[in-house]
Image (cartoon, rainbow, N blue to C red; front, side, top):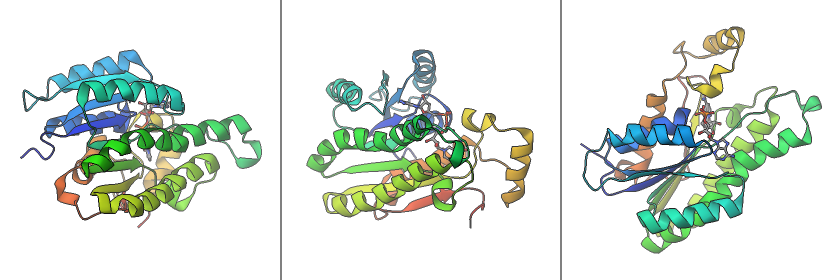
Length: 251
Ligand code: NAD
């Protein structure tokens, strides 16, 4: 049974990895989907895939290119989307980057890039989209954080701070807008098979497997299923939560 019929979703970072998988999962469940990314070729390829997955004639798919860390770009891009799609009912803040190094060697540039792309972006996009959600007294906001925001990791002070920031953002906003019918939640993925983790060496992957009770990386579809649940009416009484999806890694 499609869980997202008549819903419109905006997925930042929806052109690759987990975001793409979430966009695909939402389309399979009947939602119209806008993906936001930075690369035209990748965005076009996602839209091509989504068009093969339509369950309802009314479903629409589109992409928008913008840098999530730049408020002005986001305001302009989202204004165009709202004209085409009407209200966004589901927002997934998934765009993110890593710029790893031990803290003593961490440049100010790598600190700023990660904080603005992973955390300031959540302000930029949510601030624009939430007005209409408040007006319609309906909305689901899902922030893709990370277990690293919960447990920390050497070499990822910037990334960990950005993801812990997303968790705090989520808890506070959930308290502000719960009375308006808006649910705000986080998903904290463990390690998943995406271009982000492709960059890890075999040695790093082996040491990660040893820490995961299920002894494997997650499949992006398994993460998308958690996002579908939080986007759907099945989770209407869940807000301010962080749902960890990590094969048992930090439990
Ligand atoms: P990915 O590199 O495959 O995808 C990242 C996406 O973010 C891409 O679509 C990219 O275009 C977009 N993006 C990056 N910078 C952007 C910017 N400035 N403006 C607009 N879009 C931008 O990575 P992924 O593994 O799919 O990760 C997606 C999210 O999940 C990230 O926030 C990441 O931190 C988080 N996460 C991933 C894992 C994992 O194991 N892959 C684990 C925990 C958390």
